[in-house]
Figure (cartoon, rainbow, N blue to C red):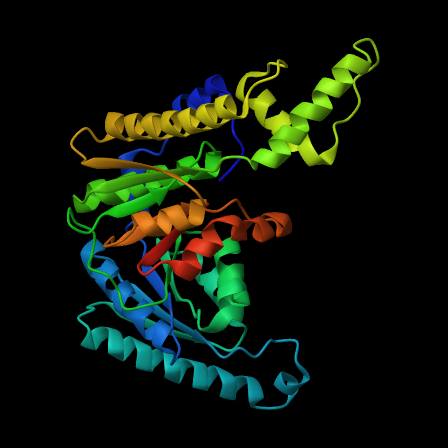
Length: 353
């Protein structure tokens, strides 16, 4: 999860951010659901899930397949090659569209494109309410490194992206809740707002999850020992930058309260735990103020954020997580929690920026 913030800064994030109106949410939902399609099992699962969502929302479904041939390749310059790639892509998209109709979709459009899959899907996302992808996570390597297409799409799409890697779970309900992982960050609040809207619209249960981790005790002890030695040496010398071994823990302490006194390890752990409790309580209050009839559960767990979210999603229909944005550096940062959740979750993962 993101770094700890002072309570007053947390409150400002919850209270001052302007949330979308329900009318804005509903206007977005009039746009079609777009699904990337190929022959893989994960793509078939994604198509099934996309059909269910489009049916429930009452919007068209667009089935997209891209050939994967980049326009800059020399092969495409040969006469008739580009047309051949386009025809093959359209054929596969048509097959996917027919599968969607067989699954019950009413209004379906097939779009075949000759270029790269990531670029094609990002382009289609500009006019979509949701983009749905199948995500392959077979083997150690693919579980550790998110596929380049999925990463590029999640990072650059103009709409929310749902990543599906197994047979679709039942649609949201009281028995199959929507789970959202939060901290006190801005992108986390966007995920919370979207999850609350989805839960209210489907009359399902919303489960809000946050996690916290205790610092390594040996490193914390080293921090206190070095700090005390510095005090004894001189209180008049200009303050130097702290040793990397323990400077992270000083920053945590400063972010919690801005105080410089020596605190015990137990006190720090209690404060981190309390801040997690405050974060989830503020989140629940934020949602309840907008959706007073929505059923909400809160979960606070010690441990890895990604694992805590996945564990709390047992039996869930959907997990909603926040991503950080569109820059190259933010694309790398996606992996800290969201990527792990996408690789491990049994249900669909809905990524919001």
